[in-house]
Image (cartoon, rainbow, N blue to C red; front, side, top):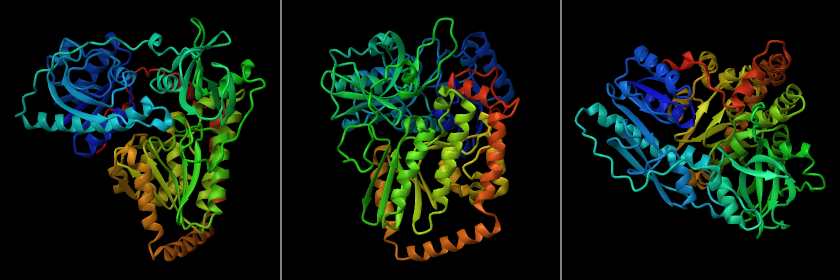
Length: 574
């Protein structure tokens, strides 16, 4: 069928449904709602005229579908709540109320919001992550909720295509709940305990954050990882670690991973960045100690640790998870040090990642934006990424596996391609391109991407600047294995598979072949050549007059809406 996806943003869920429906053979186009009102309505009408859809699906929409559209076309709205739930903040309310089970409903657009006939629904469990203060909203949205939405939308599309299904009436709403405002998220640092504070922070991650005041200044705070050792006067800042800041509660402390100054009424937009980076210039961190995280910290510890290493037999597991998948210069250097430690261990196989949710999105645009010299910080960040990738590419005595529990993009995906094998959880969305940020890209992608998919496919993937799903990635050879497991089971499932590979009697032969291949590749063209060529172009992107990178970075961080739906979304290839 010809299906038009209409959304307020080309976000992770919209991308996932786009690639999955296209892979099933549907002819897909995307239109973006440009802020609602007449402008957004006209954009939708133009997309309808262009694509002539048989069905319209709205994966993430913050405004109404105009009556002249829903009265002529079947428009299916994806609501992030179970049948009968209504209101604009369904997932926020579910987390605030401590729900353990929630759902997604696909309903038909009518005059009243969230009140149309139900075409499909899918329930899902909300994991309890007691050791992490509860699951973050953004993680839940990208994983359990996205899995449920995918299943419900595919079922609804099949039902529509059958021409036999009659949707049921929407259940009567128990409560049409309002927008979840900041007043409900407010933290009383002098009265609330760690569990409550952590839950509020993680329920606002990564949007909108919790609005709070520090030394008379207002900030949106993000994070919520509990701390089980540090203590202090409630509300005070106790320590920093790897860009995060630890703040005391009445019975413990929590880590704030990121912060964003509140925008002044007539001031410029502000961007989210590591909390320590944002707060350091204010003097609030004067005298606050920086403490290191032990690489081999006990798995039961509650503390901020973005990198952990442990061993299971002959398998080394280097787990890392950076907020939003963004890796700053410091993050890359710390991960490189951890990798070198892991690579020196007497193991046969080394797994990178193996964590639920985002693997990596490459360089940290927020930290770059907050730097005194963004171009210089960009250069430092990309070189640190290249150092890490080169270390993985030149590992000769181990098989390396990149285990992606979720999405990956740009340099973060190219980081994964440095490994010998790439495993990815089904349903993840991969974006193997840099063009939308005005960058050529580095991380040795001109070597690793053609090596996997061929030169023509590599050219097409980077030039088209479109997401791809895991099945297409498997078909192309971009990944080696698709993991069919829930998000919660990714770490254990990867560990089991890794143990099987490490115990394979043919592994020594594979390692010998790997060393021969590395020597031959180095003879044909040294890795240093790829790095030099890529970085020469990246230097122009960062420093060249007229380069669009800095403007595109700011537009991305400030969530600026485009003037029109980009032409690349007018027709999505299968």
